Image (tube, rainbow, N blue to C red; front, top):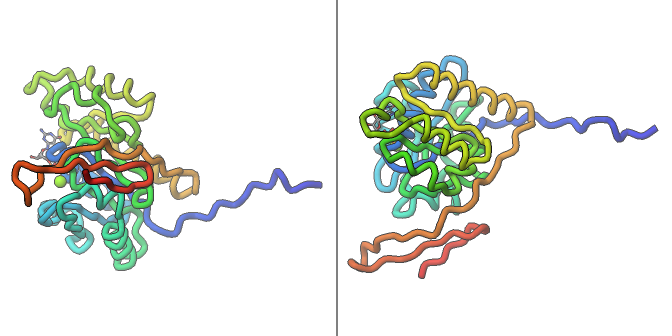
Length: 254
Ligand SMILES: Nc1nc2c(ncn2[C@@H]2O[C@H](COP(=O)(O)OP(=O)(O)O)[C@@H](O)[C@H]2O)c(=O)[nH]1
Ligand SMILES: [Mg+2]
C-alpha cells in the first residue's frame, strides 16, 4: 500500500492577509481603503499602512475618515522613490505591517497603500499576498488599453469613479471591456462609491481571495517589475536619471 494519495496537510496561515493597493496618484486608493474599512471592519480585524513620499497625508486622511481606530493606521515615509519601498526594499513596510500585527493581534487583514508616483509601480509578493491596481475614468478611457504590469497582471483591476464617466466623456463599459481584454480574463471591477452593486462586487471578490488565503490555497502572483522610468533630478536642475528595475529587483541609475 502506498501513501501517495494522502493529501499533504496545508498549514493554515498564522498571520494577517496582506493586500496591496497600487495605482497613480488621485485614482482613489485612499478612498477605496476607507470604503473597505467601512464595509468590513465589523466582520474583520483590520490594519492599514500608507506610503507617502515626504508626508503622512494619506494616513491622516484615513484617520480623519473615522472608519478605523486611528492607532491601526501607520504611515511609512518613503523618501524620493516610493515605488522602491513597495517592491525593491520592502523592509520599512514589512516592519510596519508586522508591528500592526503584533500590536493588534490577531488581525485578519492589513491593507497597504502604495505611494502612487508611477503608473507602472507594483508590489513585491514578498510584501503583499494580493494586489489591487486602481485606475479611474477621469484618467482617460485609453489608460487601461495601454497596459503595464499592474494593469495587466494585478490580482484585481479597479476602474474607479465610474460615476464620472458622463462628465469626462468616457464610455465606462468600453473602458472596462478594454481592461478585461488587456488582462486575459483576470478580474476587473468598475467601481464608484455611489454604486452599491459595485461595492458589493469588490467586497465579494475580497472575501473570496481571503477565503483562499485562509485555506492555504492562495498563491501570491508577481505582476512583474515596473517599466524603466525617468526622475527629475532635484540636485541638478535640468538633469535627471533613468531608473530601471530588473527581475531581481536591482537598480541601475544612468
Ligand atoms: N466621483 C468620485 N470621486 C471619487 C471616488 N473615489 C474617490 N474619489 C475622489 O478622488 C480624489 C482622489 O482620491 P484619493 O483616495 O485621495 O486618491 P489616491 O491618491 O489614489 O489615494 C478624492 O477627491 C476623492 O474624493 C468615486 O467613486 N467617485
Ligand atoms: Mg492616497
